[in-house]
Amino acid sequence: MNNHKTEVVTSQVLPWVGVRPWLIQLGFIGAAVALPAMAHLMGLPVRWLLPMHWPVILAGLLYGWRGGLIVGLLSPASNWLLTGYPLSLKLLPMMLELAVYGGLTGWLVERGWRSWKAMTLSLVAGRVVFLGTILTLGATDGMGFWTFTGAAVLPGLAAGAVMVVILPRTVSMSKNR
Image 1 (cartoon, rainbow, N blue to C red):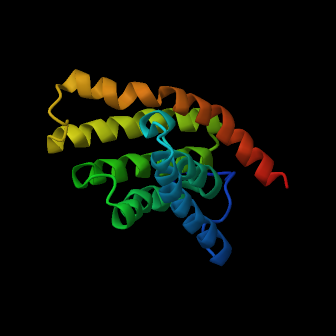
Image 2: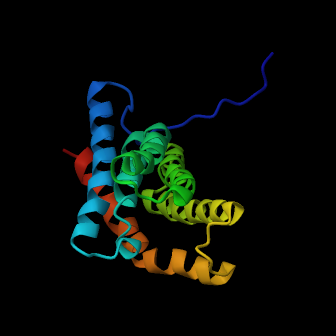
């Protein structure tokens, strides 16, 4: 007799498998490459705008942890292959950070968390993973721990807050179509 309780998950995400979902997820990866490139070309501060993060988190909100994880891992890798950015020493930390953003956001939303709460926790967890990996690799650009942490965290706070407000509404509008 099996006394284990089965977890019931009422998913609020779209199926991540199939031609259409995969094409959309490829589009998110493309956006995660194009948006930072456009920001750089226009001289906009990417550390303040976090242009690669938006499509990754959106993928997690729409397609759950699998879609978010895949887009999160492949976006920095694709960007690096096509543009040389992020720099090699920052590639692994960014891949892990963005995988946490997309994967954890999607996983939490699949378990019934409100989108803004899932995103907030994921943004914190992803940045902790990024900083931990940077410190492990010794890739602090010659800065001390606190100086690097401030430079890595503070500029993106406003963009993170705007994401938490805008992306759940965008997802809600797209699902109601």
